[in-house]
Amino acid sequence: MKKLLLFLFISLMSFNVYSAELQGTGYGSTMEEAKQEALADLSASVKVQVFSKHEQTTYKNNDKLKSDYTRFTKLSTNVPLLSPSVYYSREKGRHKATAVIDRPSLYSDKLSDIAGRINELTKDVKIDGDKALNYRILKSVQSLYDEYESYQVVADVLGINDYAAPRISSAEAMKMILEMQETPPSLEVAAEVLTKDMDEKNIYVAPVMYAGKENITEFGAFFKDMLSTKVNSVEVEEDGRNKLRCTYTQSGDDIIMACSLITGVSKVLKSSVVKIPKELVTMESVPKTDASSILNTYTPPKTDYKIWIKVSTDGDPSFLRENEPFTLLVKANKPGYIYFMTVNNAPDGEANILLLDWNNKFIKYIDESHVNKWVSLGQYRVQAPFGSETLYVFGLEREPQPEYIVPEYTLNKIGYLRNVRPEVLMQDVLYLFKRQQGDKTMSSITYTTAPNRKKMQ
Image: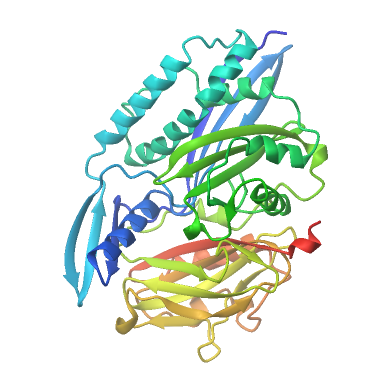
């Protein structure tokens, strides 16, 4: 039955974009070190942890509406920066660099150029045309669609809209590609299809995410391991020349998995997509509503006060195994009082106010001598429940009163709050945070925890 395309719905959501200006600041012992820190900070100002772009195509078939799938999620802070200007100065004996996107028209030109290349290569593709021809053509230009969307992320944040769009959207292209694919009989085959011809060296396989969420489910952790066996993989992101980034979502009775092999500054080398029947996935694959969704209703204050967090470990800092030791580090560009909330995003997830090692308190003061330096929060070891862990950090310029920082019910129960839902704790912590006086800021980091491989067989 011929399907009538009714409309294409596109929504854009950013998570935790705290910087009002698209600029980044970095410090280092050398100008190059300061520059790299500034460029990383600039990327973070575009999309701090998750920047999701959704495209949903709705069809009418036999007078019934049907929505096929949600398309793509842009993850991490890896965004393409087109010739940003970098300015240098000295501050307190260290090099300071400020990176600024001051030529936004470059993104408009880039997007229009890519759209033109897509249109030229797909001029023989027709929505209701020969499926085999459509498949061959669209598979050959799939990486161009990914490249287009990576630049579009930045353009949308900059408020640029005077660029050309491909005559066939990425959602339409994906639908036609999937229609011609055979359904894989196993997850093993699905992983092979996604990584076909990806024979590059030193590929870092990023955690596999559910589209629009920062949670990593049991299925996501398992499939990351499976993908790693299909390519020349490395465990640590810094050791990889290329990155394999995959996201998935549900569509009726199927799971749609889309992968991109990227290198350099978000340059897409190869792309792939596969439709996986739900019956092949016997483990938890859809994340529950998490505490981060509460932040979508919060408009952060304009401030130049910033905090960074990172995980230090011998392996992959974004993917930690059972009993693996790791260190949490924090850095701030101003003196201030910081405190932390951790959330385990597993189905039986727990939330707590992070207990620090200093005098059995949960507030840490970053003094003038530790500004722009990484400070250890202590060493930890991975334990169940597994899934994804999100660490939220809240920073205050003025000294707060402890009773107004965390909800009253947590003061005598520092640790996992088994009777409090994570989103409830987040809502209460955020309610108090908004009422604090003086300059304030917040940030977060998410990493995956998983059992040892022998337990996942």
